[in-house]
Length: 470
Image 1: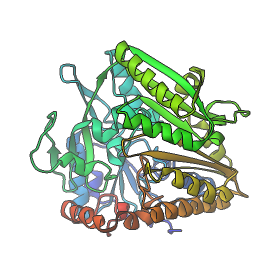
Image 2: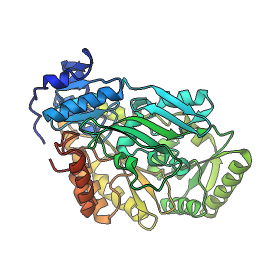
Image 3: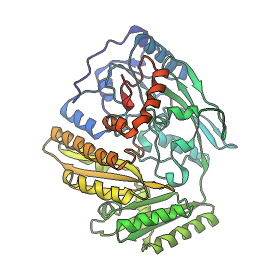
Image 4: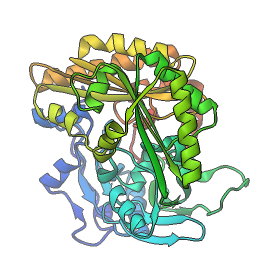
């Protein structure tokens, strides 16, 4: 366990970089920015531990104010940590070095909707569900729907390389992102160009996707939007076993179909997904949307593929119920709220050739560490799929629960590294995966370190994260 960071005196130059009243060192404000939604952080709070304590919190209202803050921090070697809404489940915005948290919540305006080119430009602190509501009112949608939609920001999506529940058709944030405005560690403001596609050197915006605040602070984002679809077809399908469901997922992608929704649950999680403790089958939620002729054709083709793999349709009620509650994370939160409650979610990805073996390896190895190990496959690609593992259990107290959660991470990440698969699909790195990133990335770490050293030679931005040398 890393000992608690020693208090750092925030220089007056930093405190004066934004207007009075927008930098706080109040104890309650500091505490609010010392914990995110990582289950380990939840256990820290229950034990009264505060190992990731910042020394001040600033709330800028413009890109120029962010630039002024970063210039002052760079000049005074003050660590800086960008903060969206603190909903990371891996400790991404938690500081290990004290310093200044730059809370982006006040930068939450929609700056423009381009209906001709189907784009929205928005400040990085905009909450996802509020942005979606504004777009819906004009007949549009982002089609980006992480489970944290109502507790995450667009800047956080970029910083953590987020994806959403509809990614099988619409992609992740890397597919939706058109341009960004970002403030570099020395205060320079960079605006990438808006184009439908370009072949002019490096993809500058791509450097910052998934950078978790280590290279600068994103202040504005331009993303693709979509007209709301006029037709939607939904079905719930039973499968006898995991192998059949995986085979159906693979066949759907090989056929070139892109359902907006395709989620497959093993029998243990199907009971929860269907809200029926007596359920014994594996289950798939399938959905297609678009203009009626296209949605109908794609839906019928996907249904035929599922039938070829032994699926039995049981009606749309199961998937409709899930659609109505798909942003509800309370089941896991309620377990964690108990001092001895153990709950964790770990998402990885693997090729089609290995995913069934990975599923069985993780399920078997993690079973002794939880009362339930629940698994589903919810993002599919031509080459493979994600696997999302939910673990719930109990321990003697919060300290024992923290230790159990850390053991879960050790076991799960070791299996992923040994199998050569992606140790994260969409939650990012943060503190949870930090001990494993160098082994995961291998020689590719040198590229990220070179970029970090060039853009942030004073190492002020989220120091130590992503495995970058301090």
